[in-house]
Image (tube, one colour):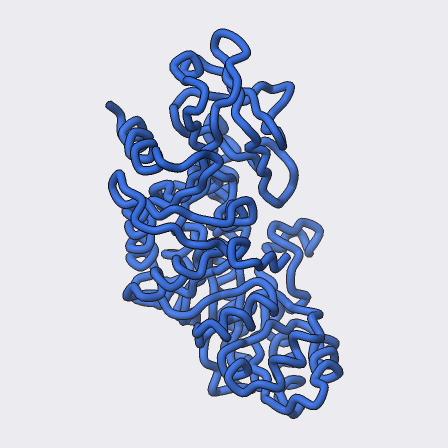
Length: 400
């Protein structure tokens, strides 16, 4: 029996009492992945990206482990909810225009002490002040640095379109703007190198493209390390009490941690290890989060149909955004139908061994987005469900 076949047998036994659709997290794999992130961080704390987990019980579990400290959230409403729930170090990784949320933040000393907001434009400071509604609490602020690689005088860009702040001079000027404005305190810098951390460099069957990606990423790492160090020096001249410099992501943990200027690493997807993280030479993890759909039809030889399963991930549309049939091994989509909202035909010889009601296990393309489809995660240890915990959705929250 292969390791994957053994996992399938475990998951089927653990969830035999549960009807599909059902979502699980394999705790042995989750904990092993957490250990690997800490090892790769080389002694620097790992801030957990809540977007990639979206389950309070699992956020609490990972933060209880040595080597993890703080959360990186994705909306202001989520940040406030987490702070009210007892998480005392929440970095909002994206700017917000949530005026009601800012009024709540600036009116509550506990929330203001726990939440740090993201800024890259003076207009965002004005929006917060306009939203205060009498709230006088000082707002903790983090500046985001653009990490994209620019070549040929800027005519070629590799990386996400995020912050407009790129140079040390630009970031330092924004730091001075914050220092001059009452009611705000600059506490951190964030720089997320998605083109390094979030792009696999070992694409199956595409050796030339894989080599080109590795070359691009090596160039980008060198350029960013130099520029990030310059930015940190310039900002510390304005704000010498800067608390943290955050960088990285699951795919770049060890590289970012090697930079002296970086004080903490961000990661989250590496806990679940979705399918988009199968193509890296620098690390490998164990798939920890899966969902199962039930077989409801057997249309013919080598074909079964499962209920639903059409859960695409965000990003540029393409086949790599679809969940992948994982267990049993050897199933694939019908190219004319793909993954459907209500039903999904699956092709391959393993289909002939599946019966009506059997489970087919899938891996989502991304990590936390799976939790937008399920209100409960069943936590599996060995071949037993040890607990069933709510996702954000299960607690009545869909923050985006």
